[in-house]
Length: 228
Image (cartoon, rainbow, N blue to C red; front, top):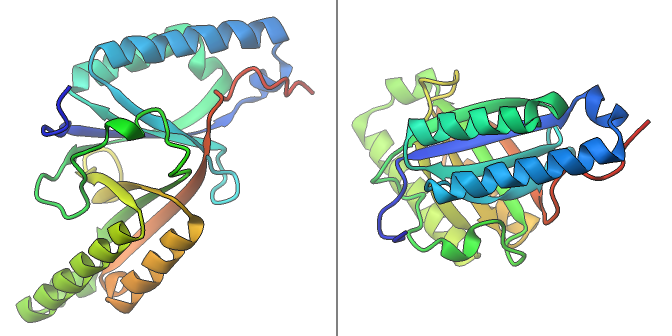
């Protein structure tokens, strides 16, 4: 699949373990692990691109999240049905968000083959959901122009720090937020520095947001022998 054509949909899933995972036998865990990974493989064959699983217990109440590019709603729906049949929702309670890509966003990167399935050189993932505050709608055209220019310059500096941005997505149809974005970073400090620059640029004056940060997990979440 060419990287010159970005996928039209972004899919974000954030989940935690149900009690059933803690009471499952090792055999049940092993079977679920196999079936779920087979489901991931089938989704990839239909065009889904999966950018790793990230441990997020230290930044949110849920344990893990992932981000996918999806070629169509049909592929996503089939993947969710396949995962349900594999027993994924027997063990995990999750929230899902879907958005359509905004093609002219400065938060994009067209060369992402090396990032699929996670990249050890970019172990931190950052997800931001946001909606515009009333101050955004009351601002003058000059204020908004200066704001957009300042934020775009911050994104340039973030990329110079090694952050890779996988697009901006309109998710107003599936959540209370207007947009979300997904980034990969070589360090927590690069994300922290970028947030400081965004605040100085006036980003949080105009936008209310929710941020989640995770660390790359190479192994799948099942088969950890978490039994009580």
